[in-house]
Image (tube, rainbow, N blue to C red):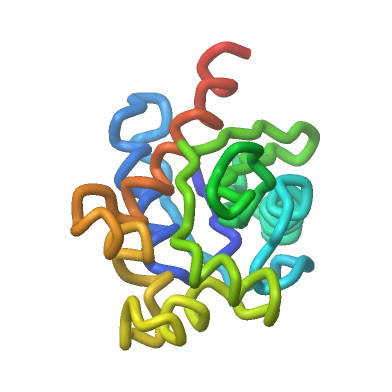
Length: 174
């Protein structure tokens, strides 16, 4: 049986592959990453846009598989935070009929990065580089900005797995 992930980002594909080993009914599935656009902005700025991107990714790659996964990270408005926003990862699992959603924990992106995203329209990677947090031009396929600001205590793969795990709840309870 086959699972398709709507991305070639190695962090997303590896997160799905590794996490499925915790689920006996899914552990033998083959996991394949497939290139697909999110159909939303490069850096989603609302929870709704982030969910739409994940849903589109999952639906767009659903072909010759049992399940498809769409994974998207983006900002969402959160009152009482310093910046007004937090980053969250969304996982959508699609079976050809129904969508199953899961979210990661959320975290507040440093103010200089958030400002560049919101005011200049940069994506997280470019904003983190411009703000001086990294020189890695592809941080989203590595530890992520969350890995940098937590000094490796929480990296992008682990953070992505949170969203996948909460989406998988639906496959065990339905």
